Image (cartoon, rainbow, N blue to C red):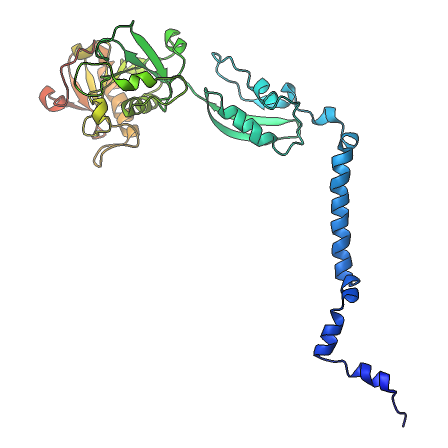
Length: 331
């Protein structure tokens, strides 16, 4: 029988823990196939990044990736606007913009958000053609009346201040151009005493009107948009004071130009703020339209009060319908 040498026997005895430790030696790990595969891919990626940063202008023609007005697609803005959105996006950093820039989308969105008449950026994405932009534009939905009947000690000429559907203040020229119809009539006073309210000193274009009554009236105006002339209506009136602007027990009213000499409508609260037993806005609109179809425009009707809060157009008595009113000259 052959006798194995001592060294061979020693190698055969390296089993279990000893063999595992022996396999963890640096050289064996370094040249392990899995290690070599990882190192190769890391090196390849690093080389690609370095080469792209150094030679991208030679690999890709800058003229093909540079952003231009022709490569920006934007839904048509309102005719009364002056700001060139495309130009604003192109010049936001003072440098030519490339479609390859990772920050292009975020920068363009931020630029649009600084433009007052843009309400929302609905979509912003890169396409094969360039940059696609979908914007929601503010639209004048109503005007707030400022004159001696709505502001204590008013010393100026009467003003109509346009607001959008959320109560954001818009340029006064939009009211002068007659692009909006319904008027918001509220008594602008901090308290009941006769003095000009402090909050009117903070009326700035493209900011939220600092009064919840204006916001609520604008929301009502939006759900009736396009129906004002057909209904014969012209005003949204709130009898709440500034101090109790959120008192939902005092309803908004809809009036005609004839004031109390024609029909008036008790609307209730702004959409989404209805009381527990109050009908939603769509039921009110449907009830009012049905009533006018049967009776005719409200400004052509004799004095009557129509209450919509139940979801039906209910004619009510003057005492039960107008107990919340104060003595103010609306006309």
